[in-house]
Structures are given as structure tokens and as C-alpha cells.
Length: 464
Image 1 (cartoon, one colour):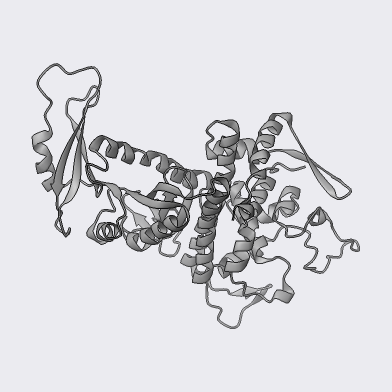
Image 2 (tube, helix red, strand yellow):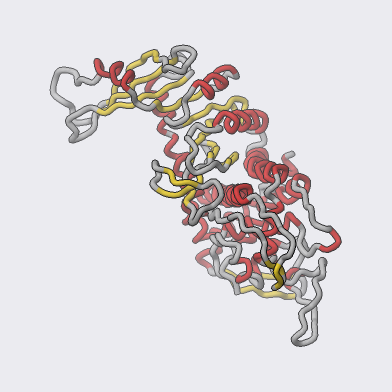
């Protein structure tokens, strides 16, 4: 019996997009290859699929070591061989055989794997896998680069417990957090990259080094021209200047200040006459140059009339689109689409809920004996970034399955609802001959058939 039959669909997507091969080529395995029981891609798949099914802690791997669906989904072996158990005398543990692992990797093995992935080369490999998951889905489904896409960049809080390396109290979120940057595609919700930062980092800290490479990769693989959409904490000369130099359009809110308040004052009055029933919106085009800006930029004052409110509300937008390219109402509509991207980013934080709990603990004992030589601790901050990257990869694999389901059913699916309806599916497993048959309820069978028909067309190798 299993309650996680949907993990097989995620493994199928993993393979059809060629992510296992990509990880094999990009990740450096420092272990003695003659002593291995689990390959590195197999360990990465184990963690990614555990995270996708809601198992946030690596300790869950010990509880699920004999779980039949996971054993089939994560193993490199073919057929039903992951379910076979070599015969052994009663009470005697079998020797480790690289050809016949009997269960999922244990929590210590997976923890050592995340430590090994904490090198810069391996973290870059995981970042590449996150982007490749999106790019290969685009190429397999669409077969061509789109004319344009909007890339949303934002900072998100990841709550931590205890004193994790470089975490800090953040007064804006009123909690002890990490403060990573996240890049998503506004139209589809795919994650393109994440970058872990210390908890008290300013919103715009490191934004230029994060945003420009993502834009360049997107224009190489996904679209001909990428636009950038950011929040009020990002606009400064260090970011806006380079975006303008490379001709990247952007739109962002601007934080209010005393100068902008004076500019807005003449426009904060209702016209003479009876107030209509429907709320109104007014737009005013202006030029504004902040103290650290190299030149004046186009800003749009948006004045809002809201029901049952005496005073008008306002906010500012800044952009390098000209009025001919995008007028003020269209600019506001473009910026308001940011809410959809924030919803997808919120799903990463709420549905997968990354658990970043690595701390610097020098090893004092091994195999029940005290360690006499000093063993330096791993870079806990880098290990926590590895865990965040693995969560982002799990999100993209789940999101791919969710989009295929939406295409098949013609309905929208929240990520949490998708997990409960299509991934957390109970099944009875029958092994006969060389086949493992998963028997699921009729209520789930229709959705599964629709999803598997879409997965059958997801063939990146053929598209490439």
C-alpha cells in the first residue's frame, strides 16, 4: 500500500525533461565511486520528490525507507528491481551492494549529500537545473522562443528557528529570517533562480548581480525580449542604469518621499461635480529625478478613488517604456499582473515551506567514539542555500505537472490542491511478473489519465 502514488508522475516528468542527465553532467561527486550505494542524481531525486510530496525534513526519509512508490520513483534501476530484496539469513543484515539497494537513502546519507552540494560549482549546477526545467518545458511544449516575457523579481522571508548562519531579525517581517531573492516568469509562474541572502539584507542588495544574468539567460532560451517587473524596494541607479543600457524595459513602484508628495499635491483633488457610483482612477505623467539618479525618468502618478473613503489614494510607477510604447493605463495593468507572480512565489513559501535548519556544528563523535582530531564544520549558509535550491527545483517539477493538468482539464489548480488531489493518491501495489501495477480509486483515475496523456507529449529530447 502507498499514499504517495503521484510521485511516479513527477519522476516521469523529471526524466522526460532530461534533468537526471543534466545533474549527472553538472554536479561533482567527490565520493569514492567504488564504495557507492546511491548515485548522486538518485540522492537529489530523493530529496526533490520528498519535498514535492510535503516531506520537509530529511528525517522523513528514514520513515519512508520501505515506501514502495518512492523506491520505484527515485531508483536508477529499471523495472521492479527496486522492490526486490536479496535473501539473507535471519537476523543478519546484508552487505551493501551497489547493484541492489533495498530502500531509500537514510537521513545521514542525504545530509552528507547536501553538504557535498554546498560547493559553488554544485550550487551553480542546481541553479542550472532550476532554469533548465523551465526552459526544456518551454521547448518541449511550444517548440519556439516567445516574442516577450515578463520576469518578476522579489525578496521573500524564510522564517528560521534558532540562530542559523547569517540569519537575522528583520524588522519589516517582525521575525528572524533569511531574505532570499526569487525570479519567476510572470505569465507562467515558473521559477528561474533563487539566491539566499542574510536576514537583514536590504531588498535591493545584490539585485543587479542577480537580475541581469537571469534576464540574459531568459533571452537566450525563452524569449526574444524580456521585461523586468520589480517592487518599490529595488529602484536605484545601480540597477536602473544597467537595465537601460542593455535596453531592458522595466516597471516598478516608487516609494513615497517628501519630493514626490509635493509633486502629487496639485493632483489630489476631485473634479467639481457629483461623485459617480463607480470609483475613478486618474493618471498624471511626470518626470522625476531622485538624488542618486543620473537623469530624470518617466514616472506615472496613479490617483485612486475608493468607495466609502473621503480622501484620494495615490502611488507612483517608474518605467523606461515611452508613452508611445505603453500608455499609463496599460502600464498600471502591466504592473498589477505582479499579483499573479506574488501568488506563485507565495506557493513556494507556503506549500513547500522551505526548512533551512543547517547550523555550524563541528563533529565531536563518530560511530559512538569521540573524535580526537578537529573536524571543521561545513559552511552552514551554503548548505541552507542548497536546501532552498532543492525546494525551488521541487516547485518547478510540481508546477510543470500542475500546468499539464490545467491544460488537460481546462481548469485552474492551486499547488496545494494539486498535491492533495493528484500526488497524495492512495494505491494498492500489485507485483506480477516484471510489472508493478498501481490500483487507485476511480475518483482519481480520470484526472490521472488526463495528466498522463499530457506527460506522454512532454518529450524534450525529441523537441531538442
